[in-house]
Image (cartoon, rainbow, N blue to C red; front, side, top):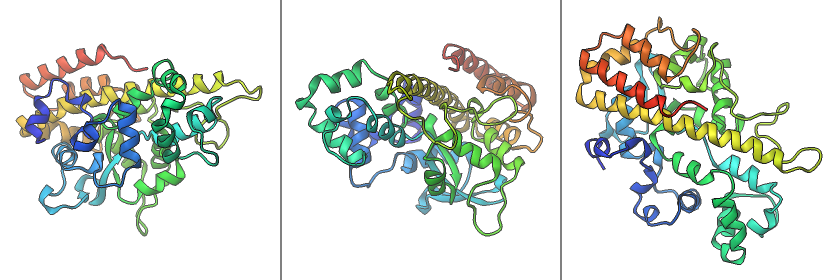
Length: 336
């Protein structure tokens, strides 16, 4: 699929990039498709496929697709190398959830430490406990929505080259904790390179991440955590699993909403970038400016960013109208 065909989709923000892989598209439900994607030998990567790289370069600049390089320099970040990454990871959260679930043995019969391979095997054997898996997918938390959304553009971003692997260990791939690492400058960059506060605020603005930060620019916690735990415990001191469901329900609803909202925003920006690059240049310049008054300067969201662009960027009436339309669309999907 090329960029023009992508933009012709009725809802490009909802397109699951896993469907670009023929063997994955033929799978059944979104949950099974994601499990197969994560446990199969890697020959395809949603956030680094040709279409994703093309979208990144239209929105955020950088090298040429033809060079085949997954990492390239961004001049607004002093030519640091960046590469595609998936913001909100499903793997760590799902492993934590099922690993301590009260029906863990019925969902995943294999003993020992929980893993995606074991979950996949348990799902493949679901006919042995059909009601348990049916209840998990149809009457439980919205894992199916998350399984689809993790492969949509609203969940894709560029991160500093060394940060991708580092955040897996330091933040368990949780995006709010990953942003906190960036805010503190804990980025594992090369050599003596220092990630500063202005880099962090520019990062939030340039990559449309306003829904993930509060009025001061600090990351909004997507999970209620205790102490140094990256992910919440599944049950409380009374062995009550409702504690788990409440915590994960809030997380999944909040993350799914943020991915979908940002995807709508990205698709609209991409349409401008492809069809009117000069106009999009004004938007990029406004968001990448050291004087951009969004992240860290009071109430921040996709809606406030649109209002800021309408007032600060030198945009034509046609583009202003597109931003107004986008704002109305986002009103129908309020932030949770």
